[in-house]
Length: 320
Ligand code: NAP
Image 1 (cartoon, rainbow, N blue to C red):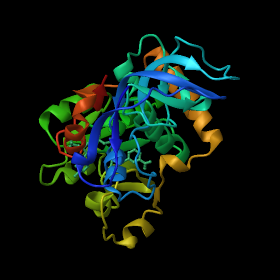
Image 2: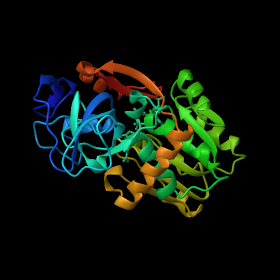
Image 3: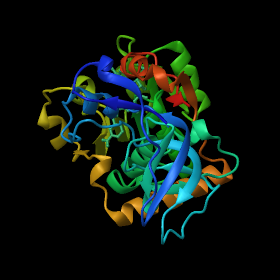
Image 4: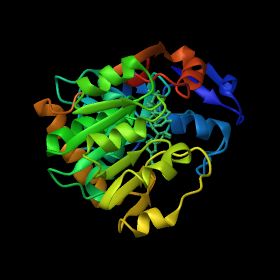
């Protein structure tokens, strides 16, 4: 099989397309024929060696894929050969034509969701659901700002929040992104590259502020986020790429809080709830992953460069 291998941490050029033996599933394992792979920003941090989780070298990146069960190991009962699934982590890595996964790492993909969309389920929708339900404890009628709504996690958050009955505001960095954010559920959308857009957001809430902010780039926005919060508001830090200074008094006067999390640290109970909710939403069409850029598996290095560039418009996937 073809697979991307990383032999040393470094820039995108360390992603090499290689021929590897197709693995065989052992007890409790599933072999998946992958059709599409989700490219997530954390894949690039891990490849660079700057992520807290450092895989043993060499390794194949990727946790998110859409595909079909090719074979099952002894004792596997949850899925059978031929089932359409998405992965939520794997044993041998998702940037490949085949991957081994534990039985608990594969989840059914409703018929109406194609494999490319399936590759955009786990990290984006799992993160958005966890942020809204478990971290922010979002309630219908609350006002939500998705700060960075045009990418994988942001679009997932818009769709989930609309289905939950929140009032949704989103931002993007291009006009195309702003249009997409409106199409995917935001009642109002703003361009986070326009000067003074935070004032417009605040005015749009009649100067009350947002109850919840899902923040994709905290090192840039956290300080101004604290001024956009309503009383008892919560900022949920999803993404950050550096340090930031804030004025804690902005929190004190609002009884506000800032929370952060990583999807790796969710509990088994939270994970089970997330998959059940995502399956229901994908099945009834409430949740519909938007595929943006598609590249062949061999172009993984290009994908790692472009996922960090501005101008997101949905989920980036590799196809094989
Ligand atoms: P993505 O698909 O690459 O999207 C990135 C998003 O960030 C886009 O909407 C982009 O908007 C936006 N952005 C860029 N500059 C911004 C700014 N100045 N202010 C606000 N937003 C800005 O990435 P993703 O998969 O959605 O992930 C988003 C972030 O969350 C990444 O940093 C990722 O590492 C992190 N993340 C964390 C967890 C966790 O467990 N905590 C899980 C998943 C993701 P434009 O391109 O339109 O400017």
